[in-house]
Structure formats: C-alpha cells, structure tokens
Image (tube, rainbow, N blue to C red):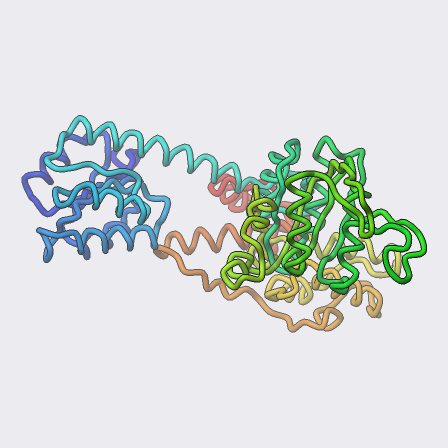
Length: 455
C-alpha cells in the first residue's frame, strides 16, 4: 500500500528529471516540488523521511540561494529529516556549506540514479534507527527511579541518566551543566555509586559558598603553622576524596589563581598542602557542575580554557524541571510521602487544584523549589489534602503553546504530554488516568499503544 511506503520529497525544477526520479523510486511514496514554496508546503503536509534537494531552484536556477533557503527551513521545521543536496554549481564549496547547515549527504550533478539510490537507502536506514532510538527513549517503565535514587518518568531525564551510567565505569572528568536546583549533585552521587569508586568517599564542595581566601585550604588542605590559626594539619577535600569522587559544585566561581593550582593537580595527580614541601599523590575522580556559561567566561578571561577542557571531558546538560513533562507531579508526590511521614502524618495527598497548579507552574527554582514548597505545605496544611493555596501557587493548567511543524504534530505532542502528566498524577492507575483525561479505558489503551507509552 502506498501509505505504508516511506515518503520521499524530490525538490527539483527540471520536469524531465522529476519524472526520471519519480520512476526510479517506486519503493517510495514520492512527492514532487519545483519551488521553495511548494517544497515547504509538501514538508508540512507529507512529513517526508528523506528529501533530495536541488540547490538551483527558481528564481535563482543558476545559483544556490533558494536551495539553501529550503535546507535552512527544513532543518528549522523538522531537523530529523534526511536531506540529500545536489548541485552543479561550485560543488565542493556547496557540499561543505550544505553539511554545515545540517544536510545528510551531497551529490554532484549530473545525477547518477544508482548512486543517488544508494545514498537515499542509507539515509532511510539511518532515519529508521534514529526513530527507534527516540521511541525507546520515550518509553515510561514501571520503575520511576534512575541511578538508584533519582525519580523521573521523563525521557529527557532518562537520557541524562543513561549517559551518566555509561561514563560511570570510566575515569573521565564529567561536567554537569544546568540551572540551579536541577539535581546536579544527585546525578554526581549517582555517577559515584555506579562507578568502581563506590567504596571510596564521595566528597562535595560548593565553590561559591566558601570565601575566596579559604577555598584553597578547603581544597588542598594545610600544614600546621602554615598561617595564623592553622593550629593543626588539615587534609583538603581533594585528599579526602582519595580513591573516591570529588564533586566541585559551582566550579565557575573558583578564582583564577586557584584554577592554576587545580589544573596542575589534574595534570600531575599530586597536590601540596598550603605550607607543605612534599607532593602527595592523590587518586581522585573529578565531577563538577555549574549554571554559568563557562565558554563565555573563557572569552572574558575569567575561566581558563585549558582547565575547562580538563574538567569537561564529558559534558552532560541537565534539563530544567519545566523540560521534564510529568516529573513535577511525580516528584511532588515523592516529597509529600517523605515529609508527611516525618512532619505531619495527617496529610495524605494533593487536592485536584494543587495538582493542576503543580502542572501549570514554570518552576524557575526547579526541583529545589518544588521540594521546598511541598515541605512548607506539609507543615502548614490544615486538612488531609494539600491545596494550591498551601503551596502558595495559583491553580492553573498548561496552555499547550508548543510550536510544531503542523496541527497533527502539535496534537501528538499535546497528547503525549497530557497522558504522561495524567499517569503521573494517578500513579499509573489506568482507570484514574482515563477519568482525569475524560476518556474511556479502551481509548486510553489505544493511545498508550499508539504513542508507545506505558502505565
């Protein structure tokens, strides 16, 4: 059936070549476009898997302006599309520019149908592999914890956890980048526990919370009598983490002179305490985190580039809570269970307006803000259910304002988000989830199957 074939969009203004290419790709559902406007309309309507794009399109058939405009638009609207670019004008320069802009591959005119066919088949295979990886990443399993203690049902955070688990057995330095309160220290602890250093110490230090004149002593330690008040020898955090992991939070706040000393340790794996005269070998893995733009700081001369590359052998970007659909409610319930048991056992759950408020809030303070609000609400609540007022939040709903390629895509994104949020609220109970969504159980089962989600 034609509808089961992968879709191939051919953007070509030569009618003879259009017919030749359409005939050659009988295993595809082929769509033809001869102009930029027609190509983008077909992209929205048909969502092709692969696009072959002639850079020489009217009104610039002898140049590449229109073709590159189409390529840029495709990459902005649907970046997973595999675009194969063709041109007879300045082929090498055009090829390099096309690849830089996101094209999958390039071929030079005149067209060899067999060669182009192989490129198209490879592009289709790669797209299928990537689609399968995305599908697997979006699965929500029964177990909502990753890395031992991190609670999440969001594919965005599960991807981060898989990266951490993959690099944990190695000794590479890891840089966690993300806003304050996103759980970077919890991820660092998870990395330590998943590594071969788990039997060693996990030592954390917040570089922004310690005065500059004390930070060197905290990190490297000092000998007795090294300075006024040094009445005994103290080991620094680096030395205490020997055989384990040292977590440097807010590493961007380390002053430049101390950056030099930290770089020397990373290069030589030895330290000298303040006032000391002999090097001390230390086997410590460094994991660091920051919410600052270190690359901008390098440009400003406030952070050393060589230190950055030593610390950032692997960079992991941690999503904000707003970028983790369904996790706010899931985490709120986890925090409530913990705090209610400790502080107010009469609290049993959240009122509907509180759940709506949690879903609708942007959480600028991320998980830390959520935890603090739930803790305060548990302490202050008068009834069995925490309300939006107890959380000091206005009741609200998601406005669903995501930009998408077309109405179908937008609807699918909204369906996935709402189903995940409803599953989180109902703790995976199908009947309650269906009630929250206002649909029948069979309809919910169909949607779960369609979107490959799991209760």
